[in-house]
Amino acid sequence: MKSAGSYGDLQLIKPLLAQVKVKHGTMIYTLQNELLSVDVSLSCLGRASSFEVTLDDSDLVYYQVFKPNDEVEIYVGRSSFTKILSGLVERVKVSKRLSRCEVTLAGCDYSQRLLQRIVKAARYGLASGGPSEVGEIVRDLLSTQTLGEPSEPITTYHVQNTGYTLQEIRFSYKPLMDCLKQLADVVRYTFYVDVDRDLHFTDRFSEYSGLTFDESSILEVEVEDDVEYVKNRVYVLGGDEIKIDAAQEQATQPVSLHDRYWADEFTPQAEDLLQIALYVDKVGYPPSPLSGELRYDQSGPYGPVIRAFELSASRVASGWHIIDTSTAVTRGQKVWLILYKTGDANNTYRWYSDGSSNKTDAYSEDGLNWVVREGSGQDFAYRTYWREPLVAVAKNQRSIDRYGVREYVESNPDIKTRVEAKVEAITLSSKLGSLKRTIRIRAEAPDQPLYAGTLVGLNIPGLGIQGYYPITQVDYRIRGYETHEVEFTVVREVE
Image (cartoon, rainbow, N blue to C red; front, side, top):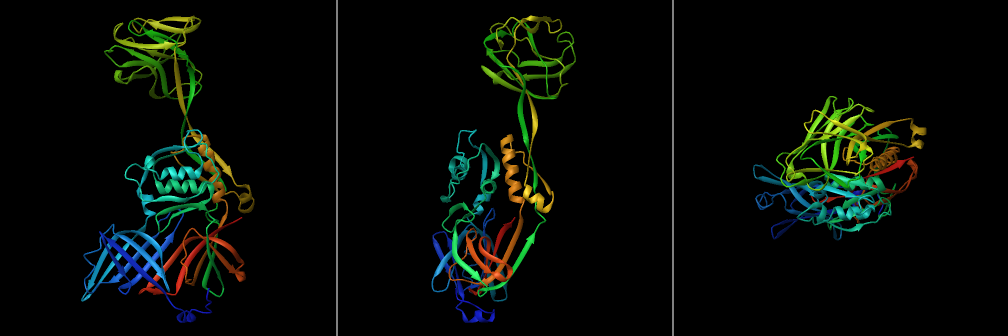
């Protein structure tokens, strides 16, 4: 790079020029001499790049032409132009004062589409049988199978395989950008959509810009070390994990409910009885729903009623059926699960059992007087479920030794498994456990554009800054249609 000893010396250097192309319908308008200012902020890691272009339209050529959703391409260069942003206009503002008219176009690059599309429901990982490698998951998230129609004009040629597989991860009604950021945090990758609408999902240290800045080309540097957001013991609160409490799952012998109430006993070990599941089928057209109740034991099904329940006849087929109960029970106290008598022999329900004759059950013809068959009955097919809040914790001991314990709680009800919660806790404790060093630089603008998401070399020995750093943001502030400067930000984690 050509050196510059001071800001004044920049006036001797050929300025970096800007050019803007706006596509409205089939027409493409190329703007350069009309430009009053061009502000471009290139970002990565979960943020869209943005632009604001203001032009002199005193001849009233453009003020009624440009509209939101027009396509924009922004170029910079000295001897030739290179595209640094392609995106869509979101806002158009017209300002007129006397004979002077200005038109301002503002919007974002195509990364914004990642915020505007919702992943409705997607489950990945080894436990799901679907894609489990992080790069494969990213590619699938961009497909029409997940997003629905129409497909997005964003390709995935620069999505790298990470070699990291997940046991399970789920996304439910989250912006695509948030899903990609969650995956990027797991493998410490960066991502952005380039000027050709291609998604880059790559290692933060894999894409080198080819540029190095030293004290001869840097006009101003600011270094900030911040420990405020260091968190080294992380608790992740997920959703509820549904677990089986009591169960008898053999279902070989059907027992008709047309002439008797039937009951089976179980002893809960959890106080939260969320659901029950029954193995039943339907005969003909029962005149009423499949109904029943939960009742405490008092020498049989005579104790207080805990909860009544029913299931519509139209929902009953052959197999397991889950019914919401959402009630509290006393741990260790025997409970009777009762199904009511209904219909006739040709129009009723059947509850399946294990066909044994040495267990305990009960039956009744009127629902009031029960025959308890202790040691001579059967075990009916049922399951009871309870829910346990998912909590996982992970710590970064090196960070704790350096900065003391700094705790953080992440609440995410979309996490449905203990494995997911643990992975999230480990990821966050690693990501948040380091001090962040932010370096902001104002420098002579090189011939070659800078892009967020790439590496840049820095050689500032006076501040102890030497090496390659990932760029998180690049700002071009062009007045008229030319500039001599570029501002960029790099961030490095400090152990």
